[in-house]
Image (cartoon, rainbow, N blue to C red; front, top):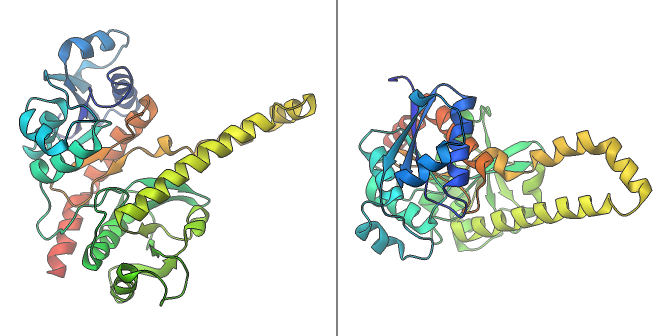
Length: 336
C-alpha cells in the first residue's frame, strides 16, 4: 500500500452524494490499481451504496464522520464549527499526510477556506488559484484563476503562470507550454490596469513561454496552453464556456431529429459526432486543483456525476507521481 496514491473523497459533498460520489470512487479503483480511495462521510449511507458494487476492498476504506457542510452555509463559520464534517476531515487527512489528495463536489466556499486554512499554502505562494482544464480544438488548456482570487495582484498572476506551466508540462505532458493573459485585444498597450501591469512581468519572466494577450474568442481554438487571469474574469469565461457548450450540443441533437433525412444522416455520423462531442465534455477532464497548497485538493462541480468524480480521482495520480508540489516549491524558492 505504500506506493499507492491515497485519495480522500468527500462522499457527502455535492448535489448527487453519496450515490454518484461512491459510484465514481468505485469506477476509479476499478480503472487503476495504483489508487486507494478513502470515502469520508456517514458510514451507513456509504455502506448502503457500496452494496451495489463488487470491488477490491484493499483499495477502498470508509472514514466515518457525522456532519456535512451544506452549500449555503457561511464557509468560515462552517469550517470552524463542523470539525467532524466530511470535507474538514478529508482536508485534515491531506494535511496530516494520511492521504495524498482530496476530491470534493461540496461547498466551494468551504473548499477554498479549508484549503488555505487547513492544508495551508506552500511557503512563498501569495494566493492559490483554482485551475480547471478546459477543452479546446487542440486538446485542453489550463484556466487559472477561475474562482479563488477576484482581486489578484500582478505578482500573483505571474505565480499563476509559473504554476500553470509546471502543471501542464508535467501532468499533461505539454512541452514548453504557451502562456497567455486574457485581454480585450492582442496589443500590448490594451487592457485594464491589472493586465497592463502584469503583461511586462510575464514578458520578462524567463521560466515561462509567454505568447502575449489572448482574447476570449481565441481560447476554444487552443492558442495557449496556460490561460492567466484573475478569478472574476476566469469564472465568467468558464461558465460561458460550459453554457455555450451544452447549448450547442442540445441544438445539434435537436437539428438531427427534425426530419427523416436528418435522422438518417444522424445515424451515419453518430460515431464520429459522439467522439467529437465527448472531447468537449468538461466532465472528461476531472476537477479543478487548487494549486500552490501543501497538499493536493481538487474541486468538482456541485452537480458532478460519477464520471467526473472518477476522472478527478485519477487526475490525482499524475499529480502525485510527478511531484508537482515539490516542483512548485522549488520554483518559488528559486524566485525568492
